[in-house]
Amino acid sequence: MAGDHVNVYPVKGYSITVCLDDARSREHAPWASLLDDRAKIVTSRLGADRFRVAGTAELNGFNRDIRADRIALLVEWTRRYFPEVSTARVIPWSGLRPMLPSMLPKVGQGRRPGVFYNTGHGHLGWTLSAATAELVAQAVLRKWPGKPVQSPLRRRQAWRAAKRCSERRVPRMKHDAGNVRYQPIAAPSLRGSCPPSKHPFG
Ligand SMILES: Cc1cc2nc3c(=O)[nH]c(=O)nc-3n(C[C@H](O)[C@H](O)[C@H](O)COP(=O)(O)OP(=O)(O)OC[C@H]3O[C@@H](n4cnc5c(N)ncnc54)[C@H](O)[C@@H]3O)c2cc1C
Image 1 (cartoon, rainbow, N blue to C red):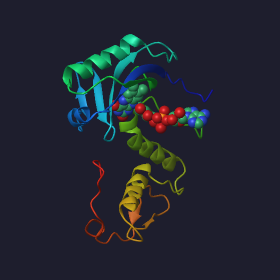
Image 2: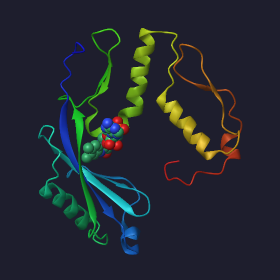
Image 3: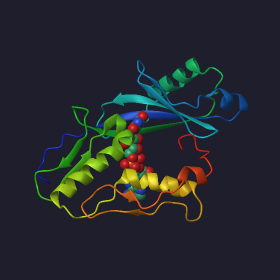
Image 4: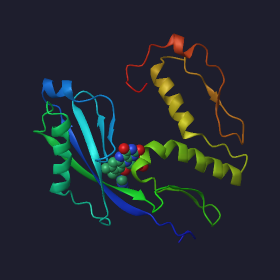
């Protein structure tokens, strides 16, 4: 309809959220994010009492059923590598990842005027989202120079800085028309004046 053939296909993935209900499980669940390249399983610690384990690439159309055998593999993996972590209570989930056969996202201008794409990120939707949003913003700017576009990456950085700092210590941002990047007007001693973030990722 928009003039392009975008061959996106849903690739189903599964996750379990392991509830770390007892002190022993909380102590032994890892804080670092892990990637088991052979099993194609990734993990994330979600705060003190949750541990997420995700994986699987199932080609089954738009079907969102949660298959018990897929979940069992994730539970087994957790038990194998983290025997001290109790899997008595896990929350299963499935989700569809939009993916292209090349496994690369489609980003940029389409054939028709005013059509831009930012889709098909597959397994790495979250990881790539800020960078591809910038690319799309730049493509829009090239098409309509002079229209200010706020970079989502810069906006997020500014938001984090604002969260860390109280009162007026956040640098105010300005931009020149046509320039996608925001420049801090003044960033005096931002690090020195703010307490360090307690969040593990800053
Ligand atoms: C199993 C699995 C593992 C993944 N692992 C990784 C990984 O390791 N690294 C990575 O970078 N990416 C990963 N991804 C991809 C990543 O999760 C997605 O790219 C990302 O979550 C997309 O974010 P989003 O905000 O665009 O959409 P979503 O996270 O899907 O958020 C959309 C939200 O909108 C809500 N919503 C939808 N329709 C409506 C409506 N009509 N009204 C109100 N609310 C609505 C939904 O409920 C949802 O909460 C994985 C995906 C899956 C499925």
